[in-house]
Image 1 (cartoon, rainbow, N blue to C red):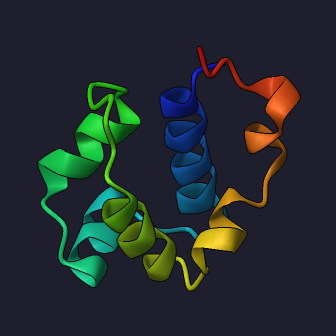
Image 2 (cartoon, rainbow, N blue to C red):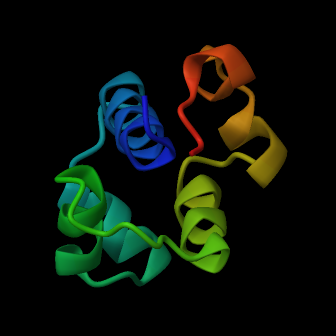
Image 3 (tube, one colour):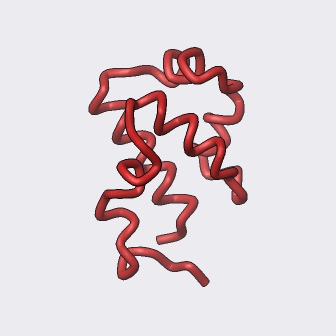
Length: 80
């Protein structure tokens, strides 16, 4: 799967796990709702690392913890 899809799935899974809405996450990390919508809907191919860091912080995770998921294993990603 593409990295963009893995990030979208990770965020969606974390929203469910934390029983949090997109709106609540955006308010917590001061991110425009449209930005999060574009990431989850896979319309944003170049997601900034700073945006991922903000989102991870919204889930009380470090960047390392955010990417510490089977979705991001090399064998699961199509990086080319």
